Length: 412
Image (cartoon, rainbow, N blue to C red; front, side):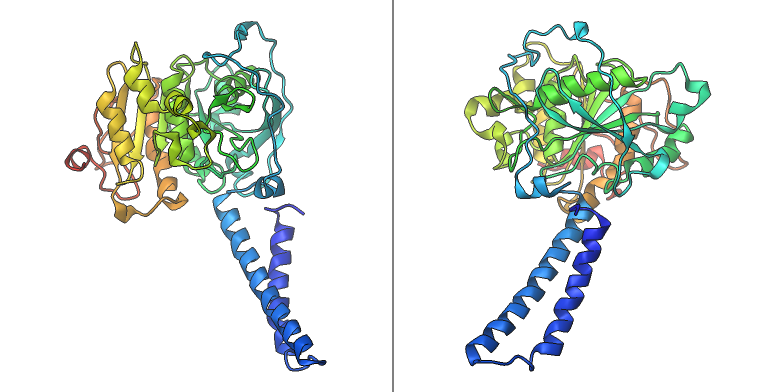
């Protein structure tokens, strides 16, 4: 029975009803010695508590899409087949342009939000470079199957969840297709292909989107294997100009790190409530040694880059939850790197999906501008038109409605 399936949820509802009715009917009817009667009643109480906890956990899990299946929950799911030492480039010396095309079979994905606005496709990809074997979800914009766009290649945004997190979260809980499809149809936002690969690759551990020889090559999985597969199977623009990466929480850290580390693979990154030092997540493999921390810290990478990378960063955060990390990146950024920082007040909510979901639309408006899609956004009357990215923060539509450059500058 699937952890996120309807059958399991209904079974828990039924068990909760039984757990309530059982003591009402049997409490005073239990027979036998006092010890037996006490034990029976304790079991009824424990059964009621256990079913209630299981139901609440399942509802929270389904709402936030933290664990996809029993393997993820129990820590038995391993998607790493091999983790060779791929060197600093993450390619292992492989000439990527000489690799044969990756041909994948796709099917309709199942779950909340998977059928909305054209539906989400899913495939099981065997990463030839990374050695990771896992699922990748793909959503195609409304224009993709329009005959007028039959020769058009579309920009791509690779979206990453937090840890723990499901590769379905951006389509389900974040409602990205439902929010963006109408704006893509009306021309307010460019028609992006939205790709979400699995990021939970090892049981009970956050890979930190890092390459760790002998352990995992998560960086190469996300920045090489997945993009190649998408470009080989869909009318996607080539990297780096046609590619961006976005994430929230741990996925936000990964987005900033991947873009800064690989300006030859990504042109832009969106980071919501992110952090720079991998040690911020105790389960992060990238925080296990000083060398790994430095190699996977976007602040260290950006500060020490011999040539500033040509990437644009959109960083949003609250005090003590992403804002300070964003400002640190802004301080060390040098042209052609650009950094837009959006301050979100604490009153907008905490480190939850409710904070990040309303940021999807403004983030994609920003992506439309900075990636040079040739499609200007049309702003509603009374709003501030977005301009190409600069090194400072600027007004943006967010959940709080109060984010501004001035507000960001006034706060430490």
